[in-house]
Length: 110
Image (tube, rainbow, N blue to C red):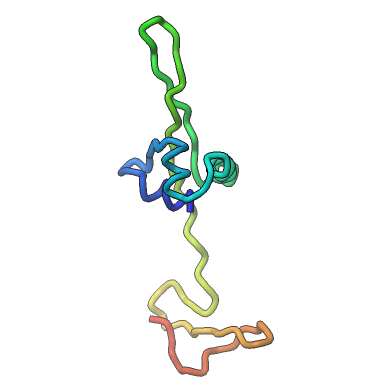
C-alpha cells in the first residue's frame, strides 16, 4: 500500500516528498510501520530515498524531510501460455494438481 501511495503521489519525474505522517495516514498504518516499509522498498530497489535539507538564518542546516524517487523496474516476464507478439499463443490453465495444461475453452491469446 505504501508503494502504491508513493507511485500515485509521484509527478512526471517519478518524485514525491510526502511526510511520514502523510504516508502513514493515507496507508492506514503507524509512522513506525511506514518507516519500516520505506526501508524495505529502498532495499529492494523499488524506491530511492533522498534526504532534503534547508539552510537556516542562523547558518545551521536542518533536515526538512525526504524525497522519494520511484525506480524504473524491468518489464515482467510473459506469463505462461502467452506469446508477447500477436502470434496467437496457447492459453494454459492450472488444474487441481497444480499442473499446467492447455485451456479446454479453445481460446488463444491475441
